[in-house]
Image 1 (tube, rainbow, N blue to C red):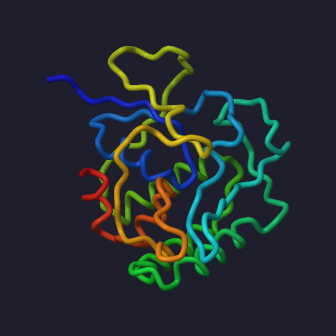
Image 2: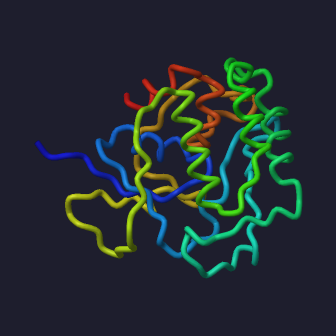
Length: 205
């Protein structure tokens, strides 16, 4: 039987469709040697708020013009960006059904200091896996390959704030949906605060 193998980019609290591909794959490799791409989910995530979609961006040293491998991209910690992200999430999701169940874990996460974007992103994925009881090893690739083996599904560029993947989106009751409609493919944070332990089942559906 053919194994479902997927190569994914390394995102900051990945979008829901990234996580959907992640949980449905029997084997996953996460890219660490690609050149950093700006304006992607690699250093940002999208959530919902009272006035619509909100983008949470991780500031980087040398700004968005870094020309280095993903594994070497450094975070700029001169400003209190983690505190800002956490305050935004609290303001947006305080009344979401499952926010209070996970608040302690995220509060601890946003107090940690990270030097590298890759480490920050991997820790965000590990935290979500812990909360949803997803048992999957986060294996990193050992070298960059432009054209991967036919055995692997290359999804490193499948998800972007600029375009949506061709997929049937997961539907759930979303925070502030009555104000501005359902927002597709937000960060996994939106799903977990809205649906809690049911999130894994929705991702696999």
